Image (cartoon, rainbow, N blue to C red):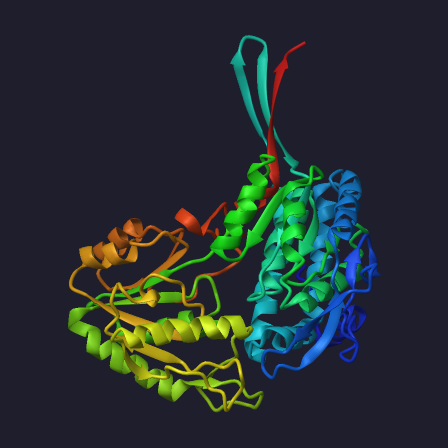
Amino acid sequence: MRFIKNNLTDTLIRRMYSVFNRNNIQNKAFINGEWIDSKNGKTFDVKNPCNGEIITNVPCLNVDETQSAIMAASNAFQLWKKLMPKERSNYIRKWYEVIDCNKDYLGELIHLEAGKPLAEAIGEVNYGNSFLEWFSEEARRCYGEFVGNVAQNKEVIHIKQPAGVASLITPWNFPLAMITRKAGAALAAGCTVVIKPAEDTPLTALALAHCAQQAGIPKGVINVVTCDRESTPPIGKLLCQSPDVGVVTFTGSTFVGKELYKHCSSVVKRICLELGGNAPFIVFKSADIPKAIAGAAASKFRNAGQTCVSANRFLVEDEIFDEFVNGFVDFINKKICFDDGKELSSGKIPIGPLINQAQFKKVESLVNDAVSKGAKVHCGGEGAKDFGQLYYKPTLLTDITPEMHCYNQEIFGPVVSCIRFSDEKEALSIANSTHSGLAGYFYSKDLDQVFRVSKELEVGMVGVNEGIISTAEAAFGGVKESGIGREGSHYGIDEFINIKYICLNTL
């Protein structure tokens, strides 16, 4: 019999799990099932990047309070790891359901503290929540292995066990999805977690903890430690070096990832890193140009270019260079607009502000450097201060040379830098001439070329004739200095698992 959820049932479920009051944002840290302030009363402000207004303030915890969160997770781990996989699956599924019933509120919260257009913010909630749905199912599929006889009277068994407390250090650009992608896998494996969200976007993390609490997840299984930028380094060090933490997972800049890697190496802590990218976007002469432009826009302008898998270097074959550039400029002028909270006309794609002043200055500096060294500005090229202090106009640059910083640095903003190439060999040489290797994209109708280039690109993920590649079912991660390990897919749970080999002599 197939269960059909009618409108009345859906309304009742949503009413049951609707846990938020829009006028009362959760702004306390969450440790061992309790909402707490910092003991010294210290707080920091959370600002709306759209207008610079203070939304609220949250506790700025210290190292001792973070240690309390680790101990709470460690104590909860002793019980959580012993639950049957189906029991953990049910808890994660209930968390998914609570989030789904509050997705509009959570989308509004992401829009408020991260600046994403509302539709894009709600899209993140749906995307992020898909990881909880996925890992609620994977919790029951964390199989071991019976190898069998390896010698007379000897049997070999491999079993999988949770690694322990997991430290989750997450970024501001996907304040919900980067938590659920990590926490869903950790909880499914049998780990408990201490979440340290970015100081720019802690409110979404706290709202997720509230959802988990309403879902009945036991106290101590999920903890959220909030702190400001100045307090982050010592807390990050503790989350890496504490003997009560079994695994660390981090998404963020390569620079910070290397520092955390150093901290973990001193105690031989296992770590999963998803770091910066410098994604090439290659357009070959056989490509469908309109589709390539649409894919380029989707990849580049999502979250105003502030994603680790955003296309960064646009490599376009000589024969179609002018056609692609002119078409892309026309697309930007006609379809990309700033988010003003109003209903958009058909076909318009809104973008929001950059997250903070430091990010704005970085983007501005990269563009100014390129222009000073001869780059041509086809559109944009400056901030949109009349719209808001952190808005930067969608920009397209050509005549890019290796001396320009934007040639080999991740821009993390709404800036397209177009570079000519003459053949496939040159395109691959430019694409692979970087220490990063997260994502890469290319457009081609040549089937032989599709397979060749897919294999030759030195990245962990490839989009072929596609600009949006993230999904819960796929293994997300990079090579070279873009990270270690994989998130999402059935591989994602492995980051939180220890494999134990048991040699059994038959009695």
